[in-house]
Length: 174
Ligand code: ADP
View 1 (cartoon, helix red, strand yellow):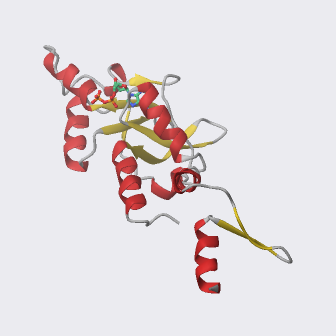
View 2 (cartoon, rainbow, N blue to C red):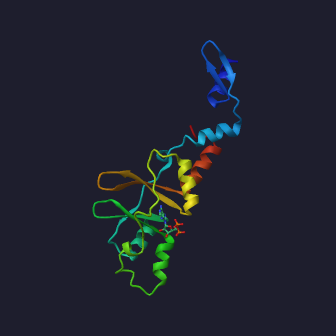
View 3 (cartoon, rainbow, N blue to C red):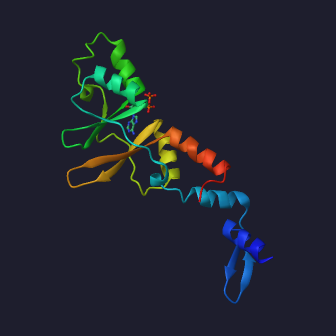
């Protein structure tokens, strides 16, 4: 019976107290699942960011997006600090105009600071998911605050969220 009780304790259904013994926590399966989800941090699922300098051309940003196989590029200045975001549609919009794509720098068309939604590695992933929905965006940079500004250290996208769903279904989440 002890191994069974240990399993139920690990799963969160029971709690074990010295001199009291095992008792039911009162939590349902879905409450325990919610508890588990609310413990997942950004750093558990973040991907490697793809960044471009703010002076590169829209043409080069499109090439980078294809080569790196991402849907969102983060734009940095010469000090490698976050200054903007470029989505697929930002680049498409610029491409359907009669503009010379090789001569327009991305800082003309990007969404810029301070309007960037970002997160940090210790933030809860569920809060980030909520922000992606609210702001209707596909991705956000994971940043590290420095004295000079924000360094881009990672990327969280809707794909990362899909991976969490699959991991939860496979009971792969600690
Ligand atoms: P798409 O435009 O390809 O559908 P998004 O939905 O991610 O991709 O982007 C919608 C708009 O929001 C774009 O103009 C983009 O620059 C901007 N955007 C994307 N990500 C962010 C972010 N993290 N913070 C602020 N704006 C963003």
